[in-house]
Length: 486
Length: 145
Image 1 (cartoon, rainbow over the protein chains, first blue to last red):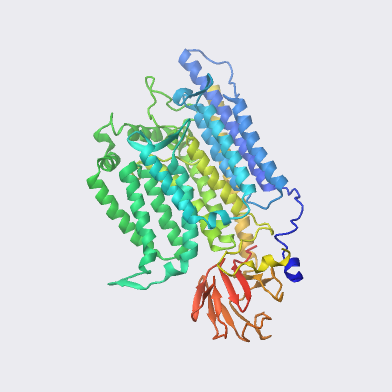
Image 2 (image 1 turned 30 degrees about the horizontal axis):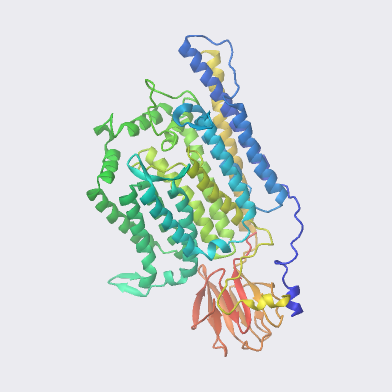
């Protein structure tokens, strides 16, 4: 069996790690740093100018120092560290995702520094930390997660082989939230275990993509078959339709039980998108949309909270100081911004001591950015999300096998669809649903989940020679390779 | 207009401009990447030898695939497997549309995909395992660049 032993180049001697320069990433990160420093400088100058105006003074000269220089330096330093780690590891992973995400995170950080710092406050042992500092902390954690996942995940077997375990964990998480979760704004989203609290639906979206990728890659050919016929409709074998029905039921259940419209919409949209990617059949998407419309119609008529959301979307002016308040204020903010925006820090921070948009840091960051950066700035931000999606799909198209391909496509799409849903909600294109804008919104769970998404995408993009997809462990077919040197 | 306000306005525009400078730099990288990928030779797929008890072909060997590739013991096949359990003309892999199909050419011992015997023609996805005789091969996507 000496032949089998010598023919294991990928499992045995791995070549020594040699640093590999990543000039594209470095150049793009430098641009990110320059842009963010300029942004922070204008923010600082604007804030000082506004303060002087309110105090009735006139300034002799502009002071362009950022409002919180150390935070910016720490953030850029952390990003640089991740870059250095990638260089030292010598892996051939994607060079665009990190700068794009760093730019989004940096814009989010600037926004959080610009909003009133007492919007969110946490105290650690008497040390009170405001919004900007908290966001910085979570961004650092997110960067660490991206770096670690991108470098540490070398095999996808732990995702692929335990798909039902992952699904069970996801459903368990859902049930846990349902039983022990606490209500915020009428939606049961937050789960607190001891001192740690988070939104499981953010983590759930990653688990969903992993499960769907594994399930669809295994049953792809069966799903593409058409064996059942109902009248003019040709459907795949009935047992393989069951997950589609289950997915639809879970989405409806989330709306009814947790009152979380955003997560339900996101999950169902990702499910349909992945189903289309896997089978290439528009009829499935059409069927899913019909199911979606039917479900929405019933929910709209039966459940008050759905009804209220939709009515509020159709006519926020019916109750301008109550239910429609946020929506109207967001529209006015976008209107004030115009084409070029009023500039970072020059928007309306408070009216009579209150924020015009109470949930500006989580649900409405795009309205705030639209006011301060204008249409031009919004388009740039949406462009950044497009770049992330493009990279993800490119990684998917270059992946070795169907599971990796579907996983990469799903991860990219989950982020893109989430950004689309909340952006469209902010712009009153669709009813507002309370999900976060990836990497810009404030929130630990959101940043963490999206960091996992990007970290996994980077890991999947590794085009090094040393990472073949693991052989599938099928009964009775496997052990021959091992016999060599055992 | 006040001089200070004008400077501040220009600084704001500079920030927006740099957002776009970054975006354009990224798009240039993406375009270069896509062009390189479309220029490169189109490899429809490849078979990687996962296990072969007699060491011919060597495990780990890679066979780039043509749109129609035959597998068997005969030397005229696209992929020659020197295995006593393989037939002379054992199976054929064809790429149609966006999908690979494997067809068993009425071989004596059959062709298996993921351990399940192929009945005539069957679809085979990337990452699936093909067994011909005692040799197991994995279908992988070709390297695009």
